[in-house]
Amino acid sequence: MSRPDGTSPGSGAGGDLFQIGELAQAVGLSLATIRHYDELGIVVPSARSAGGFRLYTRADIERFIFIKKFKPLGFPLEAVQELITLLDAVRDGTADRANHARLEQFATQAEEKCVSLRDQLADAELIAANIRARLRAGKPRAPATDSEP
Image (tube, rainbow, N blue to C red; front, top):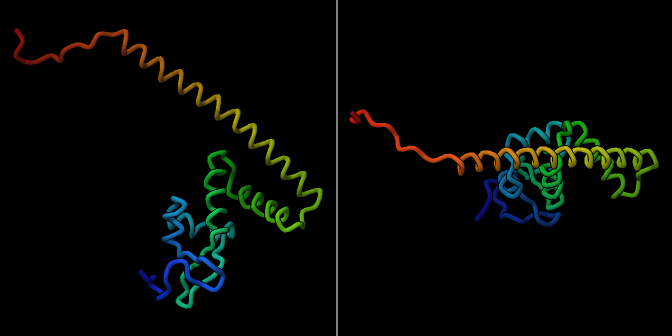
């Protein structure tokens, strides 16, 4: 199966390259979201095909998966972008003490959000259990009909 630009999936000079549709399917994000992240510079395509199609690597896919997992913690996109930049600096060996200190802040904030989410989950589970208990305690009534005297 060839792509619209004439290449086949996984072809490319840098190893496996994926078009935006393949990336969207792999990570479960919409094309619009992926394009938006590109426009903001959060995750830009690693390459472009001769026809101008965005091409992404497996590392890009991992980055999108990370973002998708991080977003539910409620951080704004600017914070996501900052975090990715800091993590890249650690990976590249260019992070300084300030970078490490900022990453510690992110870790603490993420842990605090986890506690909050656990509390919300516990509340939701109690509500669901309460509703189920009330359903079990009550007796179902037959629906009224117009033909009853």
